[in-house]
Image 1 (tube, rainbow, N blue to C red):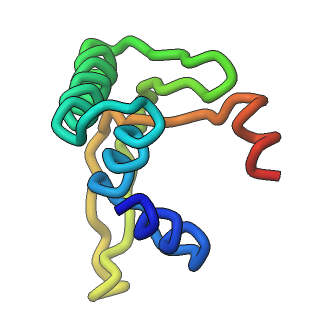
Image 2 (spheres, one colour):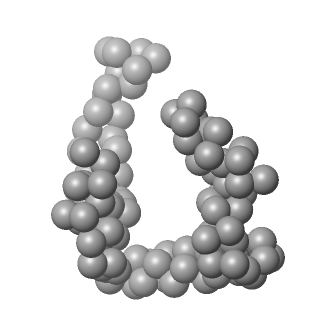
Length: 105
């Protein structure tokens, strides 16, 4: 159903995991099961590296890394007079590479 994935892209809709697997299978000539395994392996590898505090750089595509967000005080949106404490956290970030930026523009 590669047409479904292309139709969504033309309409500007979000490409989901199933659509991405479909495109990967079509472009590599593999089955959807093999494409799903490959995609899961990539996601697991990137997640594992980020969990260790590392980064993953794909030249031309971009870099996945972890950034520390400091603790801060905020305002409760349901009760603007109430201040709340927002704890520190490590958050994943993605910085697009030159080739990806050029492809989008």
